[in-house]
Image 1 (cartoon, each protein chain N blue to C red):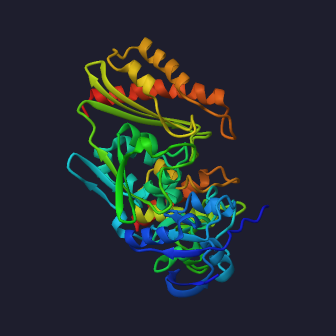
Image 2: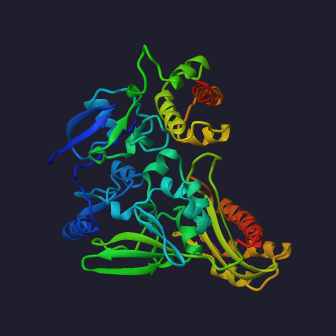
Image 3: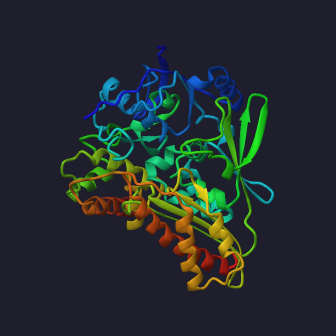
Length: 294
Length: 158
């Protein structure tokens, strides 16, 4: 067995956003931010990252919240999956995020891992990203003496990368309410029924006018270098009556829109077939939920 | 490299330790505190044998940097019961023969303990979900699930 050892670093447990940013500003390239550690600690052990400084933000109380905010929701970046999973507010106002969070890892991972960490780690398999994309969520990013708000869709410029600068911190996720008559769904497929990373995942938010697709947003995980919006598939569905022929065509279009790779979890061919199947199922589930007038 | 001073509550007792920050909670428990009931399996958060309770919630101690536990409460299998006075869950594991090689048992028991603390009347599905982060290669899980459900039933009838 390979003995996994972590290279030495200096550790800072910070209590405020200000303190975190000032450390990041000072140590920049040589620092890593850690929240739950479920992604970073294995990376440290494998020596994929070798920071001189580690800034632990998980103790910042001001970043741990779920709150009702006007026509939407606001979530602090270090809120754990477990907190989100048990939040009645998330279930009521962001059911597609609730569905994704419920399926993340297992109890041990949900108790440590945070929504901000899931996004900042920028894996194409990040389970919270597709639901946030179809919700058109925005991310608040704070740096020394400045802050900016960007759409979650613009957060992942390339594989395993985010737009966060070395002296910036992701602090908040802002989710607007869905339009009326919108049904949502998130489905993922792993290699087994238990906890696993997805080989493909699909999130859909579908706004209905009777059985016509008035508007739709689709995001896909694990089938490209980043989590991606399926714009062409959305364009095709908008205005269509959602009958079987249309759903079949929609699966064909989405297959051309993805850029899956073959890796240890699945081949590109298998990912394509899985996406086609998940796509149709997700639209049907979203349809049945939208029809109930949620 | 500077060491970090830690004060935390370990199995109900306040303790103090000086650690290098690159140590995991798992190594801190096994090497510094000689609490070897917590097992090292995959050491990457997949198998659950290193499960401990951090502030009453199950976590993989191999994914927790030791300095993170400063000011918090850690419970290991050594804090669950004593040989002369087993926790009802431990008794139930014995009665149901829910232990074969035993490597997963400490983590399994702590996940079950956290479940029953939060939800004293779990359904079979809820038990399965609660232990889905604890791999067992021997039992096929059936006896483990039965043991947890029986322990829950017994504690409510008391």
